[in-house]
Image (cartoon, rainbow, N blue to C red; front, side, top):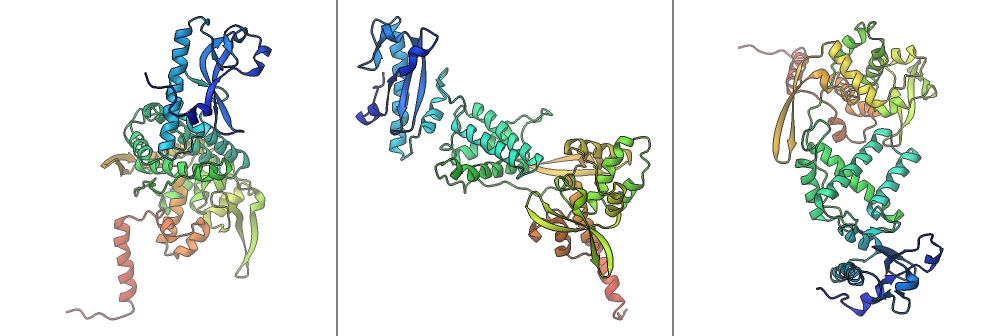
Length: 445
């Protein structure tokens, strides 16, 4: 059997304990704890799982169970096993210069079957994650779908902890954790459709949000400083679809009188395709965001608001069909939750026969996979933003002008939204030579 305590220092750090107010409890039996003293003011109580009558079986001078206690040998052995584990954990922390906080000890002890730590049913890691999510949700600093992303991260971490068979703590956030977590997300996670594994971009989002969470809580929760620079956000180029201006006009003119429940979603789709706004910003638009402005001596309508994701104030030119949609609703646009909006977009796309086959490739680990969809199956709120950026670019509008509407801060980010096919790029050469050849004579030999 392992020796109970490795040093006198550790003996002073934890001891068997009966709470002084035990006599106030209604139950005749009182829990036996191990009290861990991190310092004079910070401690935690570890429930051994055994209960006794202190008046009969507790030695208050020696802080231990009397031999007259029923099942003394078994109770003593169980408690010694826990003490051995505590001792080994503290020795490991000491050898590796790890701060043995109560949270660290508790997280490491969660592997013990049936061990219950009073007032700490959740580890400090998940308590901190819950505070982070609740703060984000309550103060409105991020939109609803971002909060859902954080909740998705929490779900994956909870399931990964079961798979890893180790408690997740802040101390465990090292390169081994990162590699195992990425492997789990790539090859183990079961999605709602029963498919196994997430796509690389989705995994990258999980890693990004994990780092956002830690960086936000580090000072607020007085967390240990951890280097997460090796936690790389994994990305791949995703060939998502966009709607051409001809397709947008076709959708706008399509008769939906037999499907009136789709009309408002159709209108918001068209509005988004000619403003470039994120759906969360469209959803939050109020009539007072629409302003009359003077442009070149003419009075035009524009949107003036702060974008929720980047917290930057932008001026959005209200052009073409976007202006018609805004006027149709008296500048009070319909409020449709994003999930419902996405579902209706697919129904609209199917109605107007957006049946073009689209091949999408994505990476799963080191393997490249190809999936084929009908175009309408890929429609979601993001198609608005991509369509605006791509169509304005194809019209020849300068990228910095497009960025005024989209709110992008860099050309690199903007061009990730512009979905110009290789064929469209090639055909632009025809436009170039048509213009050039009108300016100079070419000798034909």
